[in-house]
Structure formats: structure tokens, C-alpha cells
Amino acid sequence: MNVFAIILDTRPAYLADSGGATSLLLAPLGRASVLAYLRDRLDQAGHSRIGVASDFAPEPEYVRAMARTGTGVGAVVWVRELATRLDEYEPSDWLVIVDPRCVPSSGLGPGALRLEADAGPRRVRHLVALEHHPGGTTERVQLGADGTVGRIQRYYDSATWPFTSGVACSVVPVSCMVGAGDLAWTSLRELRRGLAERGVPSNDVFVRGGAFDLTRERDLLALSERVVLEHFSGGREGGAPWPDVAAGCAVDPTARLVGPVILQDGAVLAADAVVIGPAVIGARAHVDRGSTVAQCVVGPDARVAPGLTLRHRALFGAVDAPGAAVTPAPLGGPAQEAAMESPEMAFEVEDDGASSPAGYPLVKAAFDVIAAALGLVLLSPLLLVVAALIKLESTGPVLHRGRREGKGGRLFDCLKFRTMRAGADAQQRELYLASEVDGPQFKMAHDPRVTRLGAVLRALNLDELPQLVNVLRLEMSLVGPRPSPFRENQLCVPWRDARLSVRPGITGLWQVCRHHRAEGDFHQWIHFDLLYVQHMSFRVDLEILAATVATLGGHWPVPLGWIVSSRHRDGSAPMPAIASVPSGITPKLDGRTT
Image 1: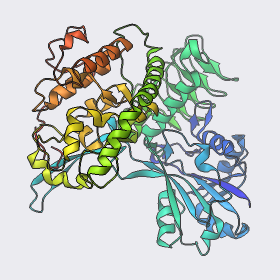
Image 2: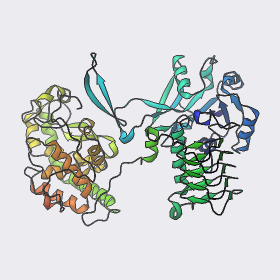
Image 3: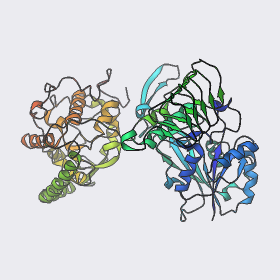
Image 4: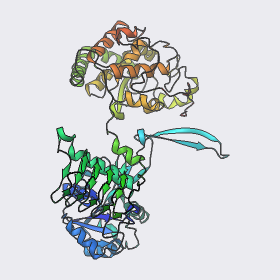
């Protein structure tokens, strides 16, 4: 079995006036090119035989430019001829095809590009990037048949948004290409559709976080910014010193390089030229006298005319309008936001007590594991008695497993002693209108689904004891926000992000300090969750645990000032430092997002 890697190439609109042999793969990226960037990812996966397939006829100058990159590219072919070249491969061979129209913002991991010898029947595997929106959400207006607004529905990228932004890579058995002369090879999105229509078996491997479509100028700029910043890794203190000036560059003494800037081989900066990073000046590019280039990608052999101001642009060829201000490329959009955001949710946490911010997470995790293990041992007789009583009273499992969102939105099975009849979850939607609390949660004082033993367990909070197993698995903590399903976390985006930045807890600030217990005030729930995330510390955790014991699981409230000693003791408005509660939230739901 042989594996051949093919990288697709194109000339996007922003290269239209560049002339010469320039293409997307030859565009500068960091210290090298887009081709070298993708080739490096293929090398990491063990694919060393690389070819290029362009959607334009590869003229001799273009082929020579490919050879000068030093990336070891073999054949350079026109995609129209690619189908005929398949006859040169054996049916047992594989193709790994990479498309720069979709470069995952989380990286093109080698695991997705490797082949598995025991993968079963030969089938195509597509590495598909899921769409990403700013803040991880998007809202859509749903119209009725008469054109009136039915509702506004919010979708979360990680949970409910089903659409993709493109196909980054396809691993294709050559045997699947029998009679494939009519397939579209210009993009993997089209190839994926064509193979599916022909009945070729395939499966999708999904990557989250969005992707860069390098045929769009703004996405090339966004990926370039990320690569440049990663190259310097923190600037002068943490990584390579900036600017990075390659051999053969000519920089006039009066020229200025500000911030993270990379000059590739042979770049020229004339007198009084200014380059502001993050920026890349390609090989043999010329920035003429008095020109200013800010946060740009300047292609190989490009020329910036004297006195020109250029910002947020990918420049190829010659720009010879002295004194003109080039309109910046439009910023924003899914890929740009993905480039700027951290993959992990992060919130500043004030240290309110004994442990340092750096040591607190480790101390909290160790304390949780030790306390949960000790609690399970000491309470094991009680747990066995409760389990036996549940089994004797009604049919069904002893434990209820509810899908909950943990830290970072990861789903886990939250364990509780079963307090309802079997199949009770299916009846909850029918009972929504009878809910006696506001917000997305559901609660009834006399829930008809609760068993007699279940009512006792709930009153004594004994139904929560199996969650010590979740704590032992580090899916939960002893103290934290209440574990909630996705349905209860989707109304308020900042609140969702804040509470999912930490592990949920068996008990928490809301359980021991809340008022209006019968009404279950949703805004108060938000407020206490945000207060905990901002003020969480080992001391606060111990005080919440002590308050939980003293109030027998929160049967009456303790003053907030006993735990959070700050100017927010009155428990009034939510904390604007972390999030704000959006106005217009409908208190009671009928199964729809409002």
C-alpha cells in the first residue's frame, strides 16, 4: 500500500492583479509559505510524497516557483488532468488530499491524516470543520407561513449548530475512483458531494473551532497573524526576538520595524519605510520610501510604491498609486474570530482566601478526590440501605443518570438516586406549563412523578449522595455551580460561559444563600453562580461546605456576607465584571427559547 499526498492550489480574487506565477500555496506565511505550512503537517503524519494540483493550467514559471520553495514537491498537475493520472496508481493505493480553502483553526492534526491498517472496508474519510460563530452562538429568526416571526432560536456551535464550513482533508482509496473522470476536483467540498452521489462509502471526522478559508483575504491575514505570534511566542521575553530579518534583506537605517515582523529572504525596506506587526514581508518584496505597511501580508516580489499606506491587506504584485490609502480588508466573521479567541474559556478569578491562584485548582482537585473517597467509604452502609429501599419500592434502576454539562461544556452522566417512576423524563415536557419556577429550570411542589421514598430522599438531600462518584472522577466538585443540562444553560450566553469555566458542584453558593426558594428566582441563580466564579477560593469552598452542613443542605439561607466578603453582600445586581444578564428574558418557558 502506497500513500500519495496532493495539495490543491488556486488563485483567489485578491491575487487577480498580481501577475507572474503567484498562487495561494506560494503566498508567504510566517518564515515560509502556505505550501510549506501544509507540507509540514503532512510530514508530521508520515506522508512524504507530495504533489500539487492547481485549478489553473500550470505554466512553466509557476512550476519553477514551486521547485524554488524547497518543499520537495513532486508532480505539479492541472486538476483537469488528475482523473486521467489515477490510472498510474494501484487500486490498493491511497490519496491524502488537502484543501487550503479549509484550514482548521485548531490545526491540521496528524491523527486525522494517518491511515489505519485495520480500518475495515475501504472507504473515504473526510476531515470536516464545523462552523464557528463569534461567542460560539448564532441566532436565527424562524418565520411562519404568512411571513410573521414565529420565534428567535439561539444555536450553540458545540451543541446544536449542525452545519460545516468546509472539508480540510480527504483520505481516499484509489479504488473508490473507478470511472471518476466526471468528479469535481477543484475543492474537497465538491469532491465529497460527488463521491456521496456515486454511492462511495465514507465517514466524516469533525473538528471544532471553525476554519480559515485561505481564498478569502481576511482569513489569510488571520492565519498569518496567528503563525507570526506563535513564531515569536511572547515576543522579546519568551521566544524569538522580533523583528526576524532573514539573510539577504536590505533594511535602510531610517526604516522602522515595529512589533512582531518577519522579513523573508531578499526583502527590501527603503528609507523611512515603516512596517508594523504582526506582518510578513515576502521574499524579494520591496517596500519603497515613506511607505507604511501595518498588519499585512506582502507577497514575494511584490512592490509597495513610495508614500503608500497599507493596512490589513494581503498584497501581491505591484501597487503604484503614491499617497493612496488602500482600503483595509473586512475583518470579523467566523474564521477571524476563531483566530483571535482562545480555545478554552477563561475567566479571571479573584483569590479571596488562603490558597494562591496558581495552586488553588490543584488543591481543590486533591481535596475533592480525598473527601469524595472518604465520604463513599463512610456512607457506604447508608448508600446500600437507600439502594435496597428504592429497588423494593418500584421497578427501574437504582440510579438515575442525567446528562449534564461539565467544565468546558463536556457532557457527563450526573448520578442521583432515582426518586421518580421509571420513564419520568419523557413526561417532563408535558408538565412544563405547570412548572412553579421561573427561568429554564423545572420544578413542581407536588410532582406526580415522584415516588413516596423519592420525596423523603429529596427532602433530606440524600438523592445527591451518588454524585460523590462524579467528584471522584473529577467530573464534578464538592463546591461549584449546580450541574445543569444544556436546556437550562442556553438562555444567557455570558452566564453559560462563566459557569462552564469551572466544574459543577454538589453544593454551591446558590444552594446555601438563595432567597425565594419556592419561586426559584432565575436571576438570583445567575447572580450567585457569577459571584462564585469570581470569588472562588479554597476558603470560600470550605465556608460553603460548612454552611451546607449547618443548614442541612440549604434548608434556610445564610447571609451572603458570611462567605463573600465584598461590596456585593447585598446580592443585588449581577456582576458586570464577568457578565450581565440580558434584558427581556421571559420568566416561564413553554419549551421554546425566547
